[in-house]
Amino acid sequence: MEHQKLTAFPDDFLWGSASAAYQVEGAWQEGGKGESVWDRFVRIPGKTFKGTNGDLAVDHYHRYKEDIALMKEQGLKTYRFSVAWTRIFPNGRGEINQEGLAFYMDLIDELIKHDIEPMLTLYHWDLPQALQDEYQGWESRQIIEDFTNYAKTLFEAFRGKVHYWVSLNEQNIFTSLGYLLAVHPPGVTDPKRMYQVNHIANLANAAVINAFHEMDMPGKIGPSFAYTPNYPIDSDPKNILAAENAEDLMAHYWMDVYMWGKYPIAAMKFLEEQGWAPTIEEGDEELLASAKPDFLGINYYQTATNAFNPLDGVGAGKMNTTGKKGSSEETGVPGMYKKVENPFVERTNWDWEIDPEGLRIALRRITSRYRIPVLITENGLGEYDKLTEDKKIHDDYRINYLESHVKAIKEAISDGAEVLGYCTWSYTDLLSWLNGYQKRYGFVYVDQDETQEGSLDRYKKDSYYWYQQVIRENGANI
Ligand code: BG6
Image (cartoon, rainbow, N blue to C red; front, side, top):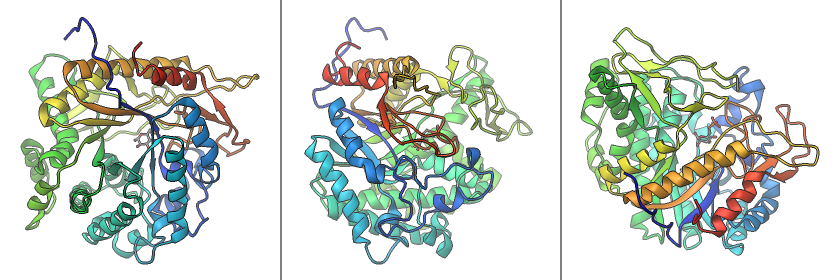
């Protein structure tokens, strides 16, 4: 649809940026913090790019005031961050670690003092190792109670201060990378376990959303889903069906549950045939259907283009975590779909497809299917950046990326989508879980390399100033 004139962004549109505890905080053994599964996993040789870890990360734990001052100067309306469960409950449950709670209280107060709306993610993958050891973490239903208890602790502590809450960050990613591809903790390859873990995570997500509403919390809560809209490579009906399969198995399989409490029919049939379907106990369906998120968070980076894949076809291939363009392997689910290169889009050095139109398509699809407001909780470009001798970073490629995506949001709003806000990934440069420090996403450059050498000084990139202008004009000139 071509519009004569685009609809303006709403006055209260949340222009923001995001991070996650493990990727920025550091201070992994300070303030009474317990060990998380990521603290443990990164120590296994060969798991991360050049063995990088978040022990120090970008030292946000000690530098948050400096980072927030930069946000204020830029004009950010919201900052999305996650709480490390192990700072609140070092062993996942039991006694509250007051020092951990105080750290986040200070961070939140600092944001509020600077008129920045805190947006809090309850879970961004750093599960307490103690719960993994005790009952295998997400594999046990015990986690529903423990996660809900942890969430309620934060609800009580930050009631009235935090109005935007993200329950689970990218459940689709942490379950599949943890239990299918074995590249995240606990490093398992077992589809049956993956779908079981995922079902339990759905229940925990629903329980926490219900708790939020039962406690009559002022504000909104929703999950953040990593949505990669699927396209067919061409109009061959076989390829169209492959794209439908991918959309059902890779997207509706999560979003339908969040919104309707129901798994999609065709995907579930496929899982049953493979013997991978989760065990659904009495009461589960009721719990899933009872939870009503206030918004759907989406993390959007790219689209996927699909073709027919026979039962003896391509399976999971290796991802590009080195930044060597073209090094990712072919990947698919035999009998469902395989991913192929889209000839119409460019790719980053990590082989992620750059497709702003895909964001508009994502927002359109969600709006039509679920009729729910959307909060874009992540979107951004991971690339190499260069600090010049005069301490500048000319990241025009990032500006192009972000600008085209903001335009796509404006178009989607003009199409009728309700979008509450836009958080870029990420605020400062940070640790990219598997890709080290060289894959940079921030508006703010952090002086540090893979060996963690560097001053950790912060420098504003060109994109920092570009976003400052966009916020000042409320996107009017996009
Ligand atoms: C999302 C995550 O998957 O994408 C972030 O929520 C992550 O934590 C981001 O960093 C970018 O992915 P990557 O692998 O490039 O760091």
